[in-house]
Image (tube, rainbow, N blue to C red; front, top):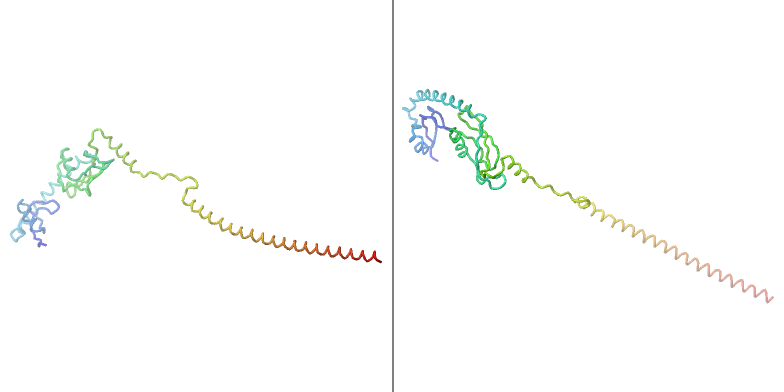
Length: 249
């Protein structure tokens, strides 16, 4: 990287310095711009002796510029400019609006400003109303209103176009699911499906146990009935034998 050199400004240079200031710049910038246009000279010993004279001139010039800027500010306060641009889709521009277009729009309105005096953070890419700061002097800023409208003569007014674009950009509301279709309820239903099966298994086991118990009772009842029948048969045989003995006697 080339070593920066000191130069003495003999004119005010926007965003660099005022007349009489010694600033450090790249050799190429001094050689190709400042020196050829008579804006600066090399800051040697001879040049430095001119500093006081130059600074007195700079202070006088600075006061005049500030006074002029204050007068221009009064005429620009509340000012509104309009720029027509092609629209690609909804409120989106086909291209963008930058400092160059703003300076041109101001010139059409009779206001001459330097592009370096327009403070715009980024290019504008949508229809709408914007506030743009113009720094007429380092101590004299002014804010103007900028409207970017559709260049199509058949297009709707700016407010209508912005309202329509905002409506289109709103996400569509998701349709409410019908009862029984909600995800959380569906999960509960799944859980419900699992639970009855477990209960069902318990019921099946209970039924089997009940059936087993009833079966055992039934078998025992059958065995008791058989024993009773055998006992009654024996008793009848005994009675018959006793009757025969009595007859014989």
